[in-house]
Image (cartoon, rainbow, N blue to C red):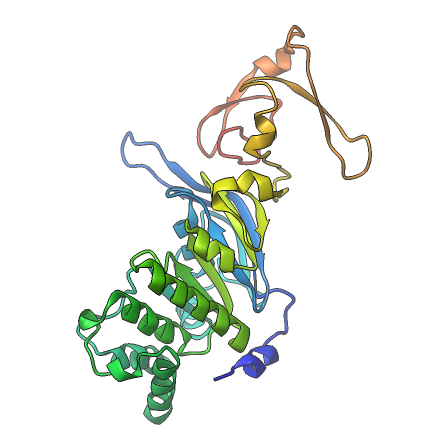
Length: 332
């Protein structure tokens, strides 16, 4: 099966998806503080990309995927999918876009347990009003491609973990989406099965031209991606080229200047500098070069710097001279 030609016809835009300065704030109840899950995160996804979102648990990966997939609206920022800002799209239109152009694969597979493998895939197309004859042909074709055609009549809750994920991938591909979003897709399968799934993802990416965006904390997944985007504490720290080592992220990180013009330095650089609270002078001796030199700590802090104001997003005090919150990264 090859849907590359069909996807090529839709390439009217330079990027498939462009996210700009995304914030996500979960409001706390009563006396509980609000949680800033994403802090001015930006990303461009091209047609046919294979991207991994890497980072530890709690870094904001799942929240980021849900926003990019139109399952959640950000608190602030824009998300343009094929020329349309879907943060401003009415829910009915957004639902149609999700069904037609985005496929989802979750850690648990999220199949309907009381339906067969065939019906799980078939139903995803039925919602788009596609004729039964085409749905049947397409479903059998996809189950065969995934290597689970012989299990087509088996209920989803009777399938193995690897079989469930293969059926979930078939379901995600059923409507020929532009983008497949997968959240920890190998989290509940053994190593051998995870390798097979990743090889399948990569082959599908090359054969169909569908873009793949996968959240993971696994080095196996990150190694298959063409590039990896690193999140930590809701901030995008940088990107990595193919074949990164998750135990040595600092060594391969390409730092990013985000939409708020922040650059986060890698830990291996920070270790060579003085501790938290140390002051540095910044200079640009040549274009695109930055020079940091230690500031004499005996120098007095100006009266202006002693004045503080509360961040309107997270409430943390900042020097009045600050343009960006030192805690959540919000711009003033």
